[in-house]
Image (cartoon, rainbow, N blue to C red; front, side, top):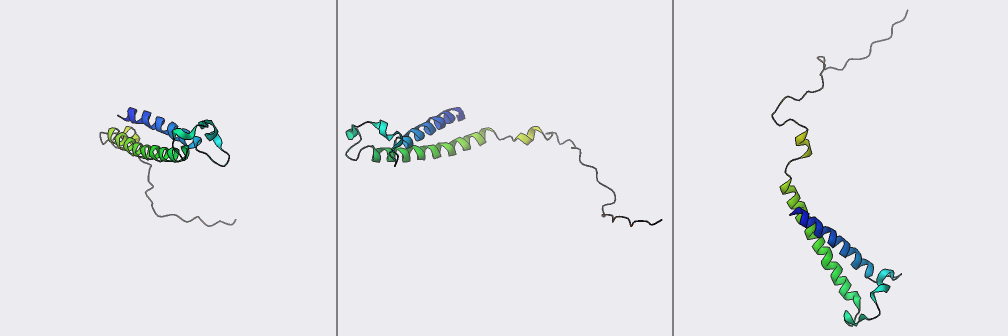
Length: 112
């Protein structure tokens, strides 16, 4: 399931990128390659269509991201630390602790 959602995620990312690059900007960008026949998209041209398509693709991208995160965490309930810490409750070695826990003050200098 996560493999399918991951492939959909990549396709959506590429589609959003193309939809954004096709929109007209102040420097026109790749919108110049959309062609001069704008009657296919309606009277307003591709502006309204591309804006709606970008919004729809972005919404699907977010929903797919949430679904991918949910399914991935439900399939992989084990953590990386589970492979490091022994599972049979064996004692894990700890750092040695000094018997005198009170901090000792430095000794005074001696004069000869």
